[in-house]
Amino acid sequence: MIRTEKESKAKTKSLNKILTIFFLLNLSCQHFEDIVPDKPVSIPPYARSFFGSCFPADGAIRIRWHQKGALILDSEAEWISDTYGPWEVQVTDPIGRSVLHISWKNRSLGIQGPLQNRIPSIEIKDDDFFQVSGALIGLKAAELPCLLKSDFPASWLEKYIAMISRQEPDLLYI
Image 1: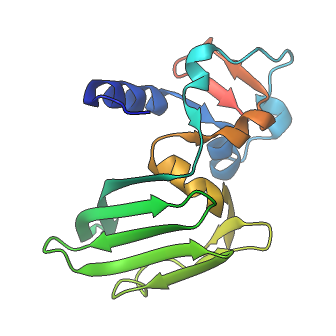
Image 2 (image 1 turned 45 degrees about the vertical axis):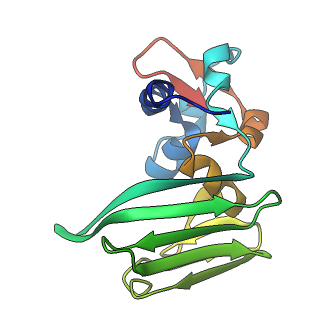
Image 3 (image 1 turned 120 degrees about the horizontal axis):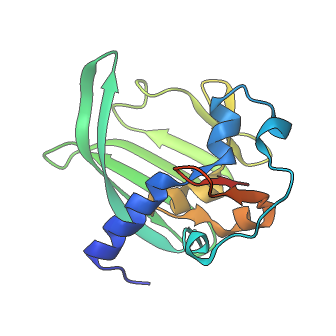
C-alpha cells in the first residue's frame, strides 16, 4: 500500500496515541489482572489499520543516538526485509560510510561496524525473542520490520484482549 505524506503523518500521529500491552508489560510493574478490563470490547476498524504484514518491506529512518547526554550519532538507517523473514539494517554516518550493519538471517543475528561495541548487547533467544543487555523484551526478530515501517505485526491481533476508549490515549491490550 502506498501512503501519501499526509496519510503517513496521520498514521504516525495515531500510532503515538495507542499504547500496547507490550510496552506496559515491559515498562511497568503493574499486575496483568489489574489492567485487563472485566469485559473485553471488540477492536474498532481504525485500530485494525495499525496492524500489517512485516514482509517484504523496506525504508529509511532517522537516528539520533544520545548516550549520557552526549550525541553519539545523528544519521539515517536504511533497512530491508525479504519475503520470508531475513532483514538487514545499515546505519551510515553523514558522509555515507557504514557505521553499523545488523542482519538477521537463518535465525542468526549479525552485528558489524565501528559502533558495534558501543551498542548494548543484543541476542536472539531460541524462541526468537530479542534479549537486550540480558533483559528479554516482548519483540520477536521477525517482528522488527513491522515496527520500522510504523505498523504492529498482524500476528499480534491473535493475542488481542481488549481496547479501552474511555481515556486519552486509547489503550490497546494484546
